[in-house]
Amino acid sequence: MTKQDTYQVLAALQAFYPDSFRGMTDAAAQLKVTLWQEQFADEPVALVQAAVKAYVSTDKKGFMPVPGQIKEQIAILQDKGGLNEQYAWELVTNALRNSSYGSLEEFAKLPADVQCAVGSPNTLKTWAQMNFGELQTVIASNFKRDYRAIVAQKRDFAKVPESAKRMITQNQIEGADFERDGA
Image 1 (cartoon, rainbow, N blue to C red):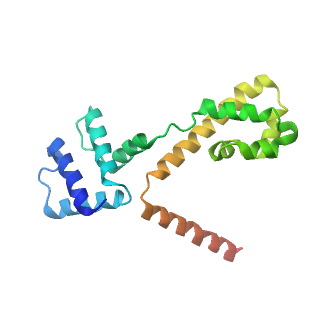
Image 2: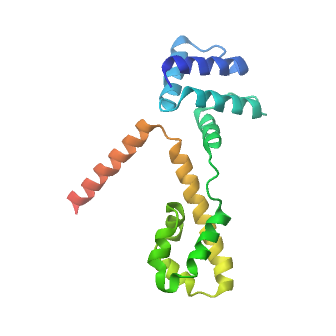
Image 3: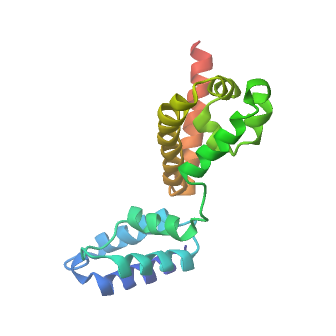
């Protein structure tokens, strides 16, 4: 989204939430435009506009949204119906049928987020040998909690601007180099 696009989005928001702009200095307005543009630089303007419309049409509080609220609307608009936790658990229970001996193969067949929540092929093998009652209560509950957390973390990270993601990645690389050098 360009700076001009950002002006248009904020002008629409000003029409709906005029009190949020009342008494704003030119410098503050310019800063607001810059900050919003940075947050949505990687997003198509049509998507941001659709997210703003979705927010405005469901807003019951009457306060102008912050960028995170518009990013949440974008995530909702882009949601392609990923796996819910129950379906993810069903994939795991299906994989358990052959995991006493074929845990490596079964683990490899699982989607990445499900693999992350399971942990390892060895975990599948251990679960395959467990009591069915414990598996369907304690293990299922823990898996679903972990899976929800993984999906939520991924969804939240998807909202971070690409420039910030690059900074995070760069810091992780530098941190890894530091750890190796310091060891």
